[in-house]
Length: 276
Image (cartoon, rainbow, N blue to C red; front, side, top):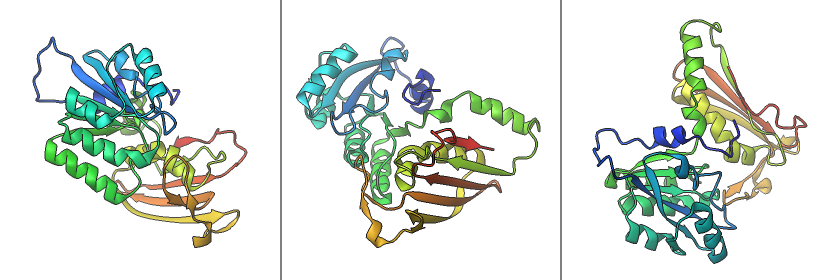
């Protein structure tokens, strides 16, 4: 499955509102937030709603005027805003899609969406940069009754249900361990873990349960990474170090999981993903 295309069911499953009745004739109103040149509109988080029954895109925001004009044409709508906060105030959407890939914008956008009364927030990965930012977003959602889903769309892939059945029926034998790998391209190491590894870690938790412990080794050009190797990560990720990473996790279901990523490992992305 192409990671740049989103299945409508992914958004539907992640942003369902059980127990909240709404008129059958009124679709959920969606507002999308992007930022051209700063993560754009992510990997399809803006346009997926065009294919999802029961939703209607009512407005888009982009601080870049030219980018906003292109986005309005792409989505076939006429309400556009340079200021996403103004859009949230005026439109009062049911769902907000926080689309930019750059994680340094996610905290403020998600908190603003919750405070504006959004019932659901669909946000591009990586979620945010720090535990403190995650706490801020969670607190805002809790105060205002919003539900948030990160765009780890593989969590809603029906293939997982088939794998669950095979495991339950002993169709593939006992699961001994979980092995995850990043893409191993130029971003290998910590950046690979941040940008793409969250997909893998999300599935590790799906199969393994909650993480109980974590240990790891971090290298820069074959030696242990140090403070001197710290640099600003790409796409608003914040400070990071290390182009080779080896992590080990213990999960609540008794499984051990590993995640490895080495920059320019020569595998042409063939190892990216998860093995049981």
